Image (cartoon, rainbow, N blue to C red):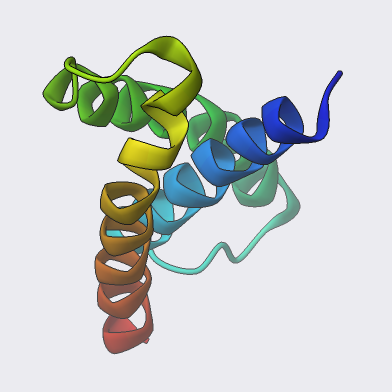
Length: 86
């Protein structure tokens, strides 16, 4: 696994975790943490796929660099919502 691929996976999971925290709030029980982790992976990959679909023009090698600003913005927005809800 290359560092770029690992970074792409981690960015997707962090985005999914921010979305989950914004929607469901902070987990209170152990089962909520496990559900949040699973939902973070699924939601993160769905959101990343949506953002990649918006940036169809670049080739595969430049695609991650083109999506990073959108990924960071979406993560910041959802993390802000989650922080605001506490």
